[in-house]
Amino acid sequence: MKFLRVGERGHEVDVASFDGLVGLDVRSVIAAGAEPATIEGMRQIRAALLTGRPDIDLTSTRIGSPIAQPGKVVCVGLNYRQHAAEAQMPIPEEPILFMKAPYTVQGPNDTVIIPPGSEKTDYEVELAVVIGRRAEYLASPAESQEYILGYAISNDVSERHFQLERGGQWDKGKNCDTFNPLGPWIVSADEIPDPQALELRLRVNGELRQNSSTADMIFDVDHLVWYVSQFMTLLPGDVINTGTPQGVGSGFAPGKFLTAGDVVEVEISGLGAQRHALAEYSRGGAR
Image (cartoon, rainbow, N blue to C red; front, side, top):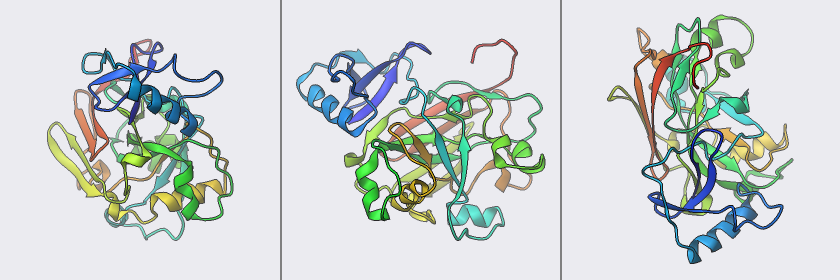
């Protein structure tokens, strides 16, 4: 099952779909007090979708982020072997964690804004894990699947000059507005039998830049959910961006960074695709 949100920015409605072409408005089928982006909410939605009549054309309406605004976005750095190699950095002994602010999250096809002063805006296709149940201090990675709502595509847009050359934390280059296109939907975990066997691709203006598999992850999905739960409580709707493979703009010599007018296309097998253009920041302009 696919869970998504459609409509104009700020007025999206929760929708469920089996085929990604037509959807069912689920506002009336969720029990009072229940949240759609929870494991229990998904169960109620699935039951309604089996008996309802989807009538929302998903091919002709804006698709927003499948999560209105996550409580937190936890990101994992250098989690692909070949990406660590292109960055000329050692394989981490433990996952490298950093955070993205919830406001960075936007729809999969919305415009990405290049911030003022940017010199090296970059792209990163990533598998996003969406949490569906409160997780704290899990006993082992084997428990993790019980807490995963589903999976989505994330583009962890980064400004490398801010991130690596301005001192301090990586957060400087990760938290600009619009820097986390998410979606187009969350695919329920039961439809992804092996999250370590997914193909990831990213193109810039039609040029294939990233082409890899989640099999190249250093720390797998189950390990990451367990690991993060040792340091912070994960809540329903939280997102974990699990890292990016080789082929980022900063991995080329010279670097291949994004500029206004570029079009980025992102896909992960079984999870759909994104397509967003880049634009310069304009004060007071539409996001």
